[in-house]
Amino acid sequence: MERTVPSDRAGHHHPPDRARADGDSVTIDFDLVAHRLVLRTLSGREVSFPLAGHSVARFYRDTTAALDSLGFALEPALPHPFDLPDAGRPFAEDDEHHSYDPEAVGRYWVILSQVALLLERYAAGYSGKTSPVHHFWHTFDIAVSRFSDRVVEPAPASTRSPGRPTRAR
Image (cartoon, rainbow, N blue to C red):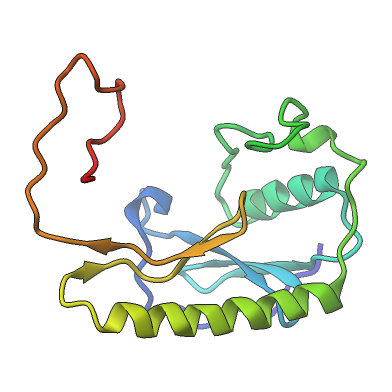
């Protein structure tokens, strides 16, 4: 695993669910320009590795090893694909899938960037609360959410799914 020069991230806010007792936290970024996975801590430590040349299993092992080397012994709660035909196969065992096309990823990144600009323009005209433009990795959806102040009456208990929020219609 290649280690790179620490970057200054001191001014960035990180959600508390990724923070340790000592206050350090970690972010994981896909650098789709340099084609690397970059893990950075709030304290300035950084580990990265190239995205190309990895099977899913090797990527999983390298990512968890990078987290561990930064002092974050984290494992996904569900370490297998979501909503895919081979969802039962754990990431750590998937040596079948190993393609990474930097040119195709570069084109995808440009498209995502352009769509994000359009969604931000769309959200700018709304006077209520909006989410930042966000990407759902498992479906490759890009979205922006708009929230109103409309009060929503809870659904009757008999029609509500346990643990599911009530949504406006």
